[in-house]
Amino acid sequence: MDYLTSTLGFDAAFNYKDVKDYTAKLQEVCPHGIDVYFDNVGGLLTDAVFTQINVGARIVVCGQIDQYNATRPPRGPRLFWHLIVKQARAEGFLVFQFASRFREGQQQVAQWIKEGKMKYQETIVNGLEYAPTAFIGLFHGENVGKQLVKVSA
Image (cartoon, rainbow, N blue to C red):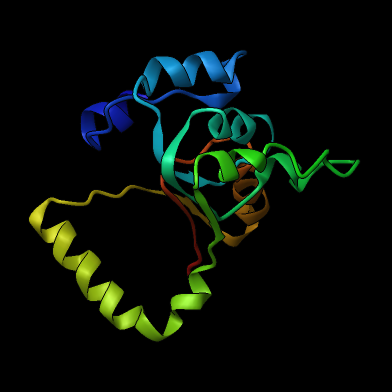
């Protein structure tokens, strides 16, 4: 969490795997509510976020790791009524929908990195034989930043 707050400059951070009461934790770290939520987790964490969104909030749904290994379908549609009450918007996000703007995005991100406005980190494992372990590690939070597998010829 220190990396997120000290290095990347976020106001607060918490590991959702270490928190029992998401609603209480979100109220603690977001005392004025939530305006933007980039959802990669889903499930109970997202349910708690929905109870904390502000009027006009925007929710980007990019992943639902909570459901990837589920043996039964999730209960739903969970707390979507909060979108109505808060006049909020939720939208799915796939990077492929912006493929036509790849070069533009690449140039902008490179500029932000050069200017120190954006930081990134990669976790690299060496050898194709470690790809399965690296992939499984994604689901256990073993990487920081982009997970890469370096393959030597």
